[in-house]
Length: 141
Image (cartoon, rainbow, N blue to C red; front, side):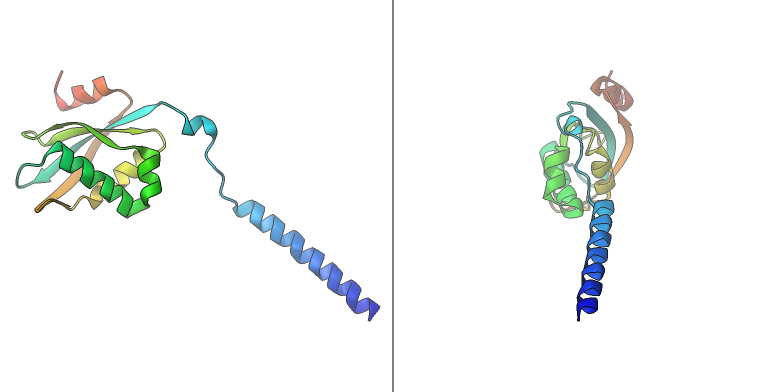
């Protein structure tokens, strides 16, 4: 009986040690506070393919909806996407986001299928760190 109790305690300690090691290895690390408070922005130059006219506001709402559908509402809040500029004639624009979320915005742009009653396709073309360079890529300056 004493031997069985000792074996149970050793077995329990062994399983507990393995569990702790596995949980430590698989733990999701939180982003560093420096990244969360970083003011570094990214500007994504994009093009919209559509039959009709698309407004900047409708595009902004549809983009946030696509990010929420693809990655969840947490990433909409983290990445803070915003359509800064959109030219309706050229159908090109600039999206402002932060450094943590620009890859999420690019990845979720393929989710832009409909804006209102129009079928659209969002194509990211370039990513840059300055608004001036992004405007130059579109041909504004």
